[in-house]
Structures are given as structure tokens and as C-alpha cells.
Image (cartoon, rainbow, N blue to C red):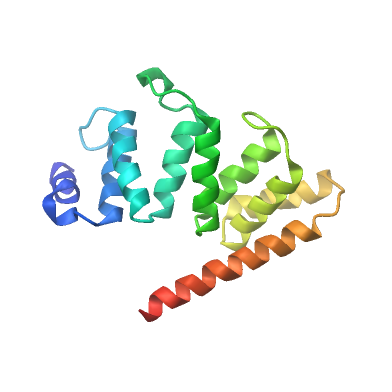
Length: 171
């Protein structure tokens, strides 16, 4: 694990957003003999976000929105966390979309917004998030409103995400 950390954190990883994300994850979780350190994790996730690593948006957004680093002096910032999660979701992170859908549906840290909840859960489900698919089944039976506009918006955004993925494959 030490060698993995050295490789991920070495000069060869400069400009490699996924290496930066992995180092952030190791610090966030305390992996590879590292002490859990949210401040260092945030630094690496911010670098990975600049490299458009969508999973970094999710982990960074979770730290802020859920207050995961509060015991280490990092204040909860729900607005910043939601902003990061939303950007990640719009760029294709199914986990960001699922997290936002859950947050808007639970109203634990945000005001309840079933329309936004449905939109983000649909976006996550379209991207193949299995838990989002299960939650949506319960959602439509529990909330008998019309969510056609949110479904159409999620389908349109998912189409844009897929088109960008196809474009990147061609480059």
C-alpha cells in the first residue's frame, strides 16, 4: 500500500486527476497506513476536481454537505456541498446524483424538494445506479404527483452526458 501511495502521489501523477483522487481517498479513509485527515483529503479532491474527476466532486461534496470533517475542524457547508454534488451529477457522476436525490428526499440537511429528488434519482438510475432504481420504485408509489417534466429533464441531461462520453472516446 505504501508503494501505491508513493506512485499515486509522485511527480508522475501531476495532471492525473485520478491519481489525485486516489490520494485524497486514502487520506479521507485513512488507508495504507495513513491517518485519516480530511484537510489533506480536501486538498487532493480540489486538485482532482480541477481535472474534472466526477467522483472527486462527490467525495468533496459529501465532506461539506454532510459535515464529515467537523471533528477535524472543517465546518459543514451544505450550500458548497450541494453545489459540488450538483456539478458532479450534471457531469455524469451517478453517485453525486443519487446523493442529491436522497438529500432532497430526506430533508435532513436541505429543505424537502420532491421534484429535485426525483430528477436526481432519475439521473442516477439512468446512469445505472442500482439503489437509485430501487428508491425510485418506492418513490413513485409514495408520492403521487406528476414528475414527467423532471423525468424528461433527467433524460435530456443523461443524453448530453452520454454524447460527451462518446465524443471523448473518439478523441
